[in-house]
Image 1 (spheres, helix red, strand yellow):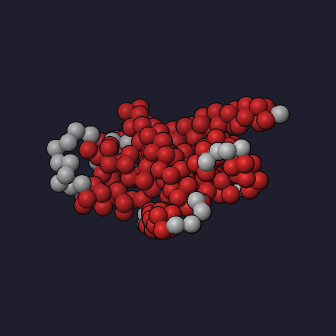
Image 2: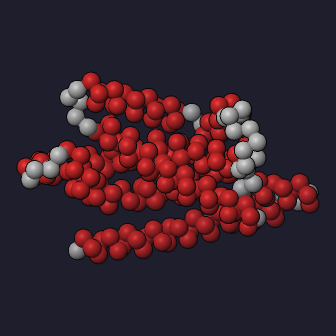
Image 3: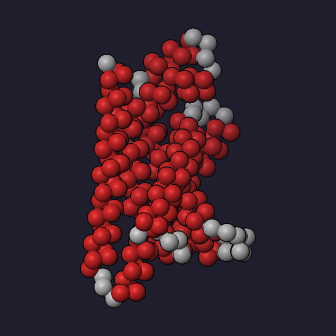
Length: 213
């Protein structure tokens, strides 16, 4: 169970980091002014990406990437299943994080962008130095919730042979023919992990509110 927990946390942490990075790029593509054909193409690509990954189940995406897209390209590659799990969960998370960040950007008063541009900043400089730092504070609870959801979503990683927490519990059940105790322990471990991360997230939010004051 401890070994499975380690893989679960590895997948969750790296997937969320990948999701935040890609999600930020997608969010910017959706909010940039549609003044030229390049901006419109970026916006369209972002919309298609978000539509695909939000519209299909993550387990189907896992099976498609593992048994389809990368079935031959990564044959014999060490930790193939773990890498694909991180990639798929990260790509899936990016679609949701993009909408979270986009809503955070749109919640910032338009005068902030105008003030930045009047000071001589370019659009990208204003976005990076003025808009996004304020937006991140607004969306931090939603990003924290995305990480918690990710921890629980990794329970399907075992379908592509990743020895995560849920697969570890299933292995114990298969060995000892006793389902109640392993699955009850599994639920308790997930609950404790979520409560720990919720506690630290609440502490971080309080520190941010103090800095605002």
